[in-house]
Amino acid sequence: MPKKKSSQPLTLIVVPHDARPPISFRFPTWLVPLLSLLTVITVTGFAVVGAHSLRLAQEVAALRQDRQLQQAREREMRSTILVQQDEVRGLSSLVSGFETELASVNNLSAEVREIIGLPAPESTPEPLVTTYSEAAYRSMAADARLSTAGYEGRGGGLTAEISDKGMDAAVKQSQQIIEMQNAVPSMLRELAELRDEVLVRMAKIEPEKRTNLDDLEFQLRLLAAAPHRWPTDIRRISSKFGYRSLLGKLEFHNGIDIPMWFGTQVLATADGVVISAGWDGGLGWAVEVQHEMGFTTTYGHTSKLLVKKGDEVKAGEAIALSGNSGRSTGPHLHYEMRLNNIPVDPLKYLDADRPYVIEK
View 1 (cartoon, rainbow, N blue to C red):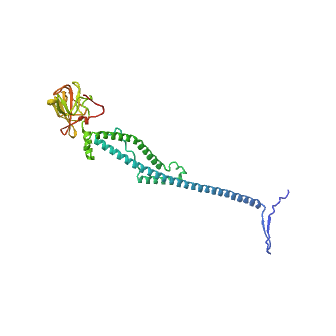
View 2: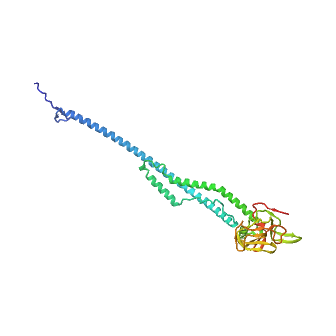
View 3: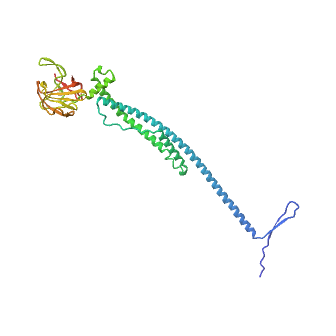
């Protein structure tokens, strides 16, 4: 059998540059592939570690850049919120001032209507606005700061909600301004109608009785309290208030005469209490009603009384039937108004909703 070759060891000789003797290292041949393998593993490990380190460095740089972008967005959004708060504050101030002016106009309108006895308009505007206080602004700012603080943890998902409160407040205030602007035309129409009604009533007041505001207010209240409904649907007058010639004799006529056929309903011209109902000499069968602020009304020459003394009556309620009783030359209604027992011209107070005709 052939002899198996024994592996010869390898010798590594190191020769120094100085006078020292050479140094030799002897190691077995199997150590060479082992060292080569270790070298490859080491180089590969360094390469893997280097690549991983590079990737980590890139991720850190990306995170740093993203953080910088987030901070920039945060600063931009905080700036936006501050601008919105200023806009909301300005809108709130505008709304508050507008509301104050409208409230003043409404109060003045209500006061004038109360003085002249007009009912409130059918559609009364509701309170228009709810303005934001300084505490509300601070609350919105705090909410905004909390929202921006949570921006990092939500990866930018806060963009849509960062200033929702400020935007909602601004939109609400803008809508309220639009609502108020839309309400202005109808309010102006109501004021114009109110002005015209006041002018019509002022024209009925003697100039000497409206020289100052107190006298004017009192006279307007008198006009408002005065019976103003017509005592019948007929708008014909056969004899006016004042001096007239009757049967060749000049006398003062304390009321107006409205010709109507027998049995026509005679209506109360305002709310009041019947203070007299019966025969009244020349007026025949007559009814007298007491009203507010010293006014009384008398309805004469009737044929039948429908009320008695002490009855409460409402404006437009039938209180008698027309006739020709008493000193009368034909069927008609004598309608008389007195203020503190002094006869006044009913035509000064009766509604002018429809024209009337004075017969000659």
